[in-house]
Length: 614
Image 1: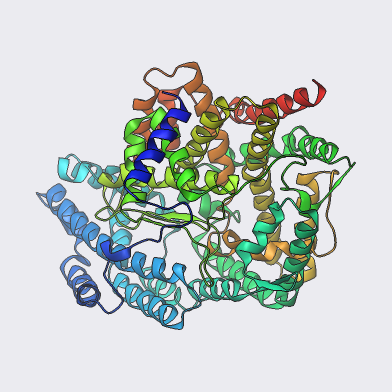
Image 2: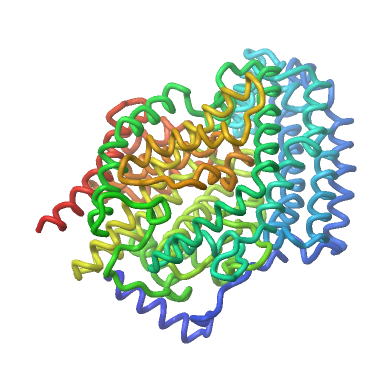
C-alpha cells in the first residue's frame, strides 16, 4: 500500500464516521484525569495525597537502613518502593491535570489560582516523601545489591541505580526539604510569571493585536511584507518587556548556580547531563561536531536559499520563509491526521493504532486560542491514564510535522507506560527519539509519493530547515545558555549583555547569508526552554542526529527493525542510551556516530544544490 492509498482510506473512514470536519480542530477532554476543578474525585485525591504521604513517612522514615540489614531485606524494601510508586502516581495525576488545565488558558485567573494552589499542596504532600530516596542512597552498596536478589525489588533495579547516581550530590535532609518547599516560591513562581506574561503579550501587526503564536506564524507567510512586520512587532514587544525577562533570566540562573554549588556540580550543565543519563564527554562531542559543521550545514543552506530569492543575503525574518514561486495552501487538520496516521501505518500498524487513539479519544488540543500556552508538547501524565498533546495548529506544512513529532512522543509514552510511574519516564536525550523518528517517517512517506520537481524541492528545503532548526539552532541555544550561566556566576547580566551573547551565537551558527537586523538581539527572551528547563535544548540535536543514524539503519536493514525499535520505546527509562542503541549497531561515544547523523543533512542540501544546477 502506498501513502496515497493509506491517506485515502483514512480520509474516507474519517468522513464516513463524521469524526472530524475539515474546518474544525479537536480539543482535549481531561475527564480521564478529573471531571473538573471542583469534582469530588479531585478533592478526595488532594486530601488522600496529604494523608497517605504523611502515613508513608510515618511508616518508613528512619527505617530503611534496618530493613536492608534484616532477614527479608528485599521483600521489605520492595514493599516500600511499591508504596512510594503508588504515591508518585497519585501526585502526578493531580499535578498533570492542573498543569494541562492551566496550559489551555493561562490567562484565566481561576485556572491560574487553581494551578498555583495545587502546586503548593502537592509540594507539601511530596515533602513527606523526600526522605525516601535520601535514605535509600545511604544504604551500603553491598546490602542494596544483596537485597536486589529478591525479584520484587530487582524489578526496580534501573530506578534504584538511577537514584544512586544522585548520591554524590545529595544534601543533608533538612537542606533538601528546604530546597523542595521553597521551589514553589522560587523557580516554580518565576516559571509561572514567565508563562502568564508571555501568553498575555500582544504584537501589533498591520493594525491587529496578535498573540505570540499567530505572530510567529507570520514569519512563514508568503508575503515578505508580513514577515517583516511580524519580526518588527515581535522586537517592539520583546523590547518593551525586556526588563522583566532580564530579571527572570538573572534570577533563575542565580537560583540554578546556588543549587549547583551546594550540590557540588562543577560545570553549569552537569546537573542536566546527570538527569539525562548522558556523559558530559558525549554532549561535548555532539556540540563540537555540530559547531564544526555550521559552514557545511546552515551557512551553506542559507546561501543557497538567498540565491533562490535572487539575493546575496536574507533578512532574519526570511530565514523560514516559504520558497518563492511555490504554491502554498492551508492543510486541513483532517488531512494532517490522515497523512501522519498513513505514514505511521506504513511503518507499523500498531504505531498508527496507538496514534489514532489520540484523535478518537480526544487526547489532542489543537486550536490557537487567546491565553493558550504557545508551542506544542506531549504530556505523559501518569501510566494509569494516558498522554495528552497540545498543538497550535494553523495549517502549515510545519504544523503537520509538529503533529507527527508530538504523536511520536505520545506513542513512546504509551508504550513505556507499563514500566510504571518510576521507570516509564525517559531521559530527554532519548525522549526526542520517537518524536523525531515520527517526523522522519511522515516526511519520507510524503516525499516518496512526490514526483513534481517543484513540490519535491519545497519539501526537501522545508525538511532541511527543520533539521537545521533542530540541530544547528538548538546547539546554538545550548552555547548561548553556557555563556549566560557562566557569566552569571560573576554577577548579573544586563539586557544589553544578554543580547550580545545571543547575537554572538546566532551570527556564528546562521552564517554570513543571514542579516540580523536591530531588534533581533531581544529574541532570546521568548524561548521557554531557557526558563523551564536549562540546557534541555541539546536533547533535540541529540535526538535528531540519533534518528538520522537510526533511519539509515532502517533503510539498510528494514527486516526486524520495527521489533527492535518498539523494544527500545517500551524500555522507557530502564536502560542507558548505550544499551538501547547497541542492537542497532550504534554507539554515541563514537565520533563517527554524530558525523553519520550530520551527513544526512549534508546529503539533502547536496540534493537541493543538484536540483539548482540541473
